[in-house]
Amino acid sequence: MSGLPPLAADLPAGFVEALAHRAARLSGFASRVVWYDSVSSTNDVAERAAAAGAAHGTVVAAECQESGRGRMGRTWFSPPGAGLYVSVVLRPGEMVGDWDARSVSVASRITLTAGVALAEALRASTGLPVEIKWPNDLVVGPRKVCGILAEAAAAGGELRHVILGYGINVLSAAYPPDIAHRATSIEAEVGRAVDRAAVWAESLACLAERLTELSVGGFDQVLDRWRALSPSSVGARVEIVDTSGWHAATTSGVDRDGALLVTADGATRRVIAGEVRWLGR
Picture 1: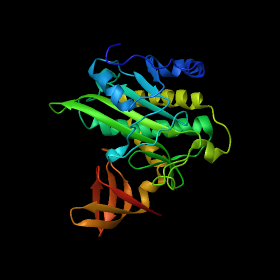
Picture 2: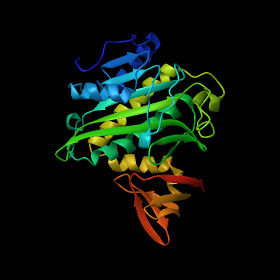
Picture 3: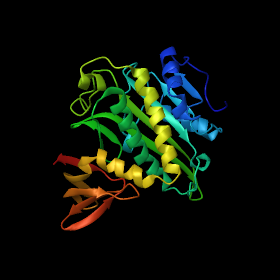
Picture 4: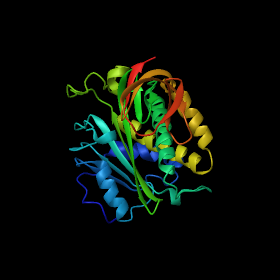
């Protein structure tokens, strides 16, 4: 396939087996997987592949990212072998179902759907009761175990494709001081070794299933599940920022476009992409 640099490493045997075990659930999703020892960013590689024509469901994964990133330009700590660093090329226009796949707003629905799918995957493969924290974090208590970054490419107001990237902290690692207090890993939380291949394959299988549900009109079910997995989206104390500074608020839900609803000074406001400080419940 054009658009992808030469393979740095073959997909490890355990990962091949884990993916094959879930073939019926994937239904062709992740039929093309490219695996690297190290890349700058899996999202960057997947974006170049998408621009060159990579098919829907193409997966780019790496043992290490040199310049992994998260929301709002933050760095995603991606040490070798400690996590799962994955990006998937999504082409909504090629997904089954009757929906407005060209709308840029579809990207926000894909982000919410990915949160549900990955939370369910971690719960199923590890037993860890992860929750979703708006907009794109999976957490155990106050600490993040997985981050999700969806980047949409559009032209003329119409969606071309979405690169869905996610990083899962699997093994314990020496996190940088600025994130050590808010990051954790699956193994640190469950207190035992975890099958990284099983977590990876389950994440892709759950994504395939939930994205299919989304495309055939099941967004209400996805949204209901997102809300159930995100107790902090209602009743949590936060601070939001605008041009006049920071303001105390309380979360009051998520709307159908993925915006966080907050109550501040007696009025409800929508937070779409701004900074939110989480203070607790």
